[in-house]
Amino acid sequence: MELVIQDRLKTLEAEKGIETLYACESGSRAWGFESPDSDWDVRFIYKRDLNHYLTLGNPRDVVEVPFDKALGDELDLVGWDISKALGLLRGSNPTLIEWLFSPKVYLSQQEVLDELRSLAKKCWQPRALAHHYISMGFNCYSKFARKNDEGSKEIQVKKLLYVMRSILNALYIKRFMAIPPVDFMQMCKELLVNAQEEWLLQLISSLIEKKKGLDEGSLVVLDARLDNWIQENLDRGVANSIEERPKLDIADFDRLFHRVLGI
Image 1 (cartoon, rainbow, N blue to C red):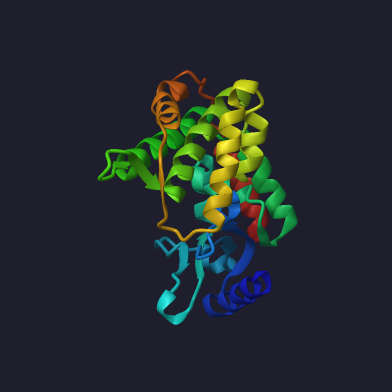
Image 2: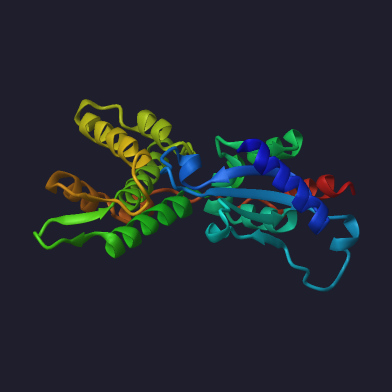
């Protein structure tokens, strides 16, 4: 599939008049808990010719090629122009940060990627990122955890993993003041090291293995211990206690932008 993705990106370059600077996998395949029927969420950063940027207009800065399952297509491609990417990076955009540290890289201009990652480590905002993850987890759990006809609470396996990943990412940020690894199991092994957390690590490992053998809509019944853990940790106070960092000067982003464009 990697070769198929690389070929599709090269075709897209010719069709759209763009140059790919970096392309990666996003979502469940990057997190390490894809299902057999999971799509391939390919995300990329690109640039255009210099003349494209020399306008007072507002040229489109996104390339999107949605998949069509009816045609047997499994690839969902979304790309951001380098100007958009750098602007969002300065604002500590969680989505872009995850792209940059994805463990599955399809294409990259290594020097550009190294500089983007270096900027990300300097400019990311721990409190904002933790708030993002807690809010994601809270909204997902509120929306998808429901009582069944027997009175037990149940939720799709993938949604449960989304909730747990969101909570644990926030806890990782609070403990280490570092960007969490995108690979979910790697992050869990770094975070859940105490004996009293062993049950949680084993449960996560079991859920990941279960999801890899099930389709996207499969349900799991929540036991009281896990439900209580989720309720206790969906706490915005986790993020509020994290110190804010000063925003990086825009000149740092301009310098990389100019180098990428060859100015």
